[in-house]
Length: 343
DNA sequence: AAGTGAAGCAACCGCCGAACC
DNA sequence: GGGTTCGGCGGTTGCTTCACT
Image 1: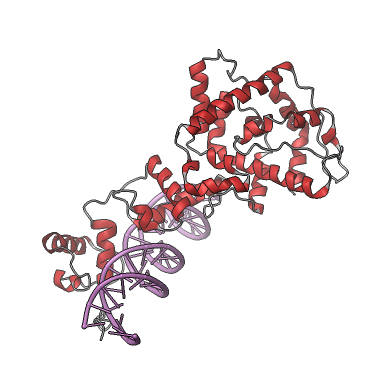
Image 2: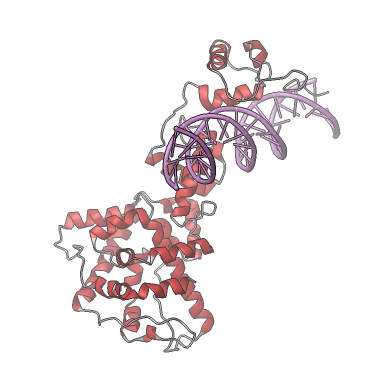
C-alpha cells in the first residue's frame, strides 16, 4: 500500500506556458492557504495542472522573494566559484544567491557563463585551462597580430594591460603552448642539448606574463641564436637584439612587482583561486591562469600599484624597447611561423 | 521585407532519495 | 520490509525572440 498517484493520468492536464489567470489563482491560493501538499493543491486552487507543474511555477517564478533581472558581476563571480566547487549542483549554488532559483542559474550558466569560460580558454567542467585542438586553433589567431603578442609580453605597459584585460584567457592559451614546448623538450632531448629550443619554466605562482620575463636564459638563448634552428625539427625563430640595460632594469623591477602582487594576494584579496578546488592546481602546474580572473585582480593591482607609486619606484609602465623585438618578429611576417607551428 | 539560424529561457521529463502505508 | 508516492533536482526540449543576410 503506497500513496495515490501525484497526477491522475486519466484526466488531461494542461501543459505549456502559464497564463496570467493561472498565475493569479496559484498565488492567491498559496497566499491564503500555503502550498501544503502539492499533489492536492491544483484541485483545491481550481487549476487543471499537475502538482509538480504548480510547484515549479511557484518556486521559479511566482514566489514573492524571487529576484529577476540581469545577474550582477558579483553574482557571476559567485556562481563560477561555487560551480568550481559544487559542479552542477544548481540548488546548492542557488542557496548562496538569495532570490535566484536553481533553474535560472542553470539557464544562465548554460547560455552565458559556460560560453564565457570557454572563450577564456577555461574548461567549464573542470575550471582548468583547455588543452583541446580548438583552443590551439584559436591560438593562431591570438598570435597573428603583433599587438596581442606585444600585450602578452609587456605587462608594464598599462595601456597594454588594460587592453589585455578582456583577453586574460589568452594567457591561458599561451601557457598551453608553453606546456607543449616543455613536453616536447623533456621527451626529445637532454638538458645539455645546445640546439634545443628553450622556453622558460614558469614559476607556478607567477602570472604568466611575468613568468616569461623571469627566465633570463630564454632571452639569452634567443639572443644567442639557439632558437634559430633545431635538430628536432623546430621551426626557425629569428634572432633578437641583445637585451638592453633598460630591459634588465625592467626584469629586476618585475621581481619587486611580483613580490608586491604576492603580498596582496596573500592578504585575502578577491581571487578565484581562493576556492578549495583551485588549491589542487599546484599539481597541475597551471595555477596562475586561474589567479588571473577576468574581473581581475591582477590587472587592477598592477594599476593601483602604478598609481600609488606614481612612477617613482621605477615601475611606471612604458611601451619600451622591450616590445620591439617581438613586434619586429611579427612585422617581418614571422607570424606565419606561429600559424605553421599550430598546424 | 522575408527567410534563416542562433540565442535565450520557461517548462517538462525522468531519475533518485526520503517518506509513507 | 517492501512497494509506492512525493518532493526535489539536473538534464533536456521546444517555443519565442533576436540578429544577420
